Amino acid sequence: MATERAHPALHELLRQLQGIYEAVSNFQPNHTRPPILDSSLMLAEAEDDSHPSHQDHIPGLKKLKESLKLDLDGLQKVI
Image (cartoon, rainbow, N blue to C red):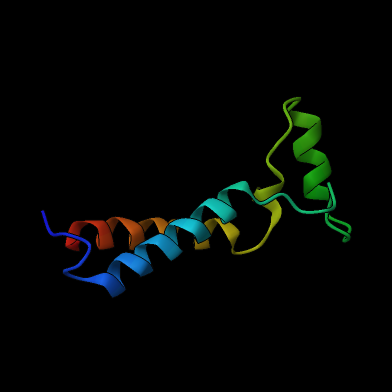
């Protein structure tokens, strides 16, 4: 397996991406509900007694997390 000295820039990028991925995974918005009227959130809460993740209602966050995971997996294969 290649050592960290072989590709220091790639290893640094990997560490940065891992940090971003962890931050996105642990992100909790300040507000429990978005500041917009969205009846779909109320319907979802009425149908499901469990508390949905607040991350699910942030546009683009799920896609960002998926893209980060793909980048991390690909980079780990190269390194």
